[in-house]
Structures are given as structure tokens and as C-alpha cells.
Image (cartoon, rainbow, N blue to C red; front, side, top):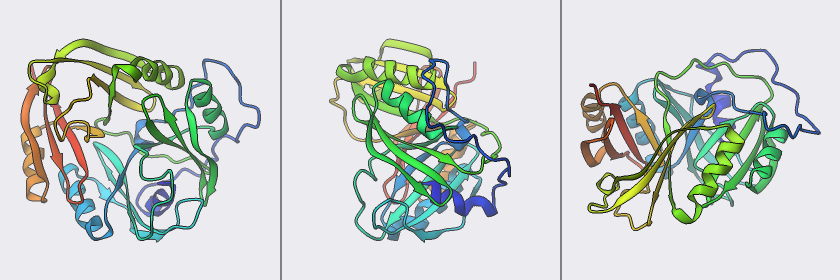
Length: 302
């Protein structure tokens, strides 16, 4: 879906002329297949009202730096629709921004992220083999192909492929996909994602302090993973979370949290959970103009 927005970014971000690998008609079933390209090609999908579109892009860029692609109005779904679309590319991660001018067709609007893969057909086959369900079959766009899949616990993601292989610089820090689940689905989701993404579990705290997710007096399970698609934090609780916990889809790592929050405030961003220490990081939760809620964190220096 955000592939149209990426097309607009070509004036600002260099694209390699090297063709991407051909789409496979009979993808291999080898467990060694890893279709990731790199976290700099993965974006969080942000849906805002058209009237909030410009304010959101400006505030996000002011908070994290970087640049924004040229804005345009496109049909980015296989069925009739129209949306404003733009990329905000920052050293801490990229967002694909959509401001629909028409009703949003199913299943769009509920996907968290878009992940670039080397071979869409093979990646979809692998995802399904590891337990994902297609919410829509793959469809073409002007610069590639797309699909939306769902994992255990209702975790929706887009996978996409480009006809011409892009070449973006590496991120300064890699964002964290924050997924809130109950114990009913957590282990199944982790198994699915580890199998598909070849993800490595970097930590699994089965009794993290509940105060980190607004549940003082309780504990929760916090699983952190990394893969070629980037970082992921699976937050496993009883689901009885006070707002805004569970609404923060992505966590952005910065070098200086107070300085970043100061820039955010100056850009009209609201701090929902003030900065505080959580184990090895200092963290806060903010809300950007238009309603996008995100976590921002910085490593705690020894």
C-alpha cells in the first residue's frame, strides 16, 4: 500500500537501477529462506484525517529529523479509493502516511507495517507455511506488488516487492515494532515470526514490572526479538491495559530522550506518559497531531 508513497520519494532518495530478483513461480520450501531486505525499507503505516495530514508529517519530521517525500493523491488499493500519501524518512525510522479522501477499503487501515521482501510469492508461501493468513491476495501497483497477511493474535502486516531494487542508507537506530498480546496467542505468534523472519530472541523476561505498561502491582512477559526486518517487542499481559498502553505500535530509539521530547513538544506533540526508566532504557509515550501514538526511548548509560 505504501509503495505508491515510495514512488514519490524517488526524487529525494536514490534508487539503484539494479533489477530485483525475479518473482518465483515455485518458491523453495527450505527453512533457510529469509526474504528480508533491511529495516530501512520497513515502514509503520499511519492513517490520519486529511485535515491533520500536514501537521502530522511536519511534527514527525521535526521530532526525528530527516526529510519528507513529495505529497500526492493516489489510488493505493486494488479497489477504488483515493488518499493523500507521503513518506516521512528519518534516521530513527520511516512512516508511510495516508489521509484517505474516500472510505478505506477492507483490509486496509488495520495493517501495522509494510515490509520489503526479495520475492513476494516465495515470502507469502513462507508466511502461510508458518501460520499466517492472507487478508487479501497479492495485487500489483505501479512499482511492484503487495499483500496483507495476518498472524496469530490478529497482527496484520503488509509485505511488498519492488520491480527495481531500492537502495536506501541504513538507519541510525532501528525502530521497534511493539505488539501487545495475551498469553493465548503470544507463543504461537513468536513461533510463527521466528520461523518466517528467522528472528532471534534477544531477551524473554517472564516477570517484567507491570508498572511499565500501567499495571502497577502486576508483572507481564516482555519478549524482544531481532531479524532482518528490524526489532520487535512482544508485550504479553492480561490485556487489561489503561490507555494509552497497547496503542503504541512502534518504539523509536534516539540518542537523547529529553532533547527529542523537547523538539516534539515544540512541534505540537503531546507527551502521554512522561519519561521514566524501564530497565535498560529511558522511555516515554507521545501522541502526534492526528492521533498517532508512539513510544520513544533511549538506552540508559551505565
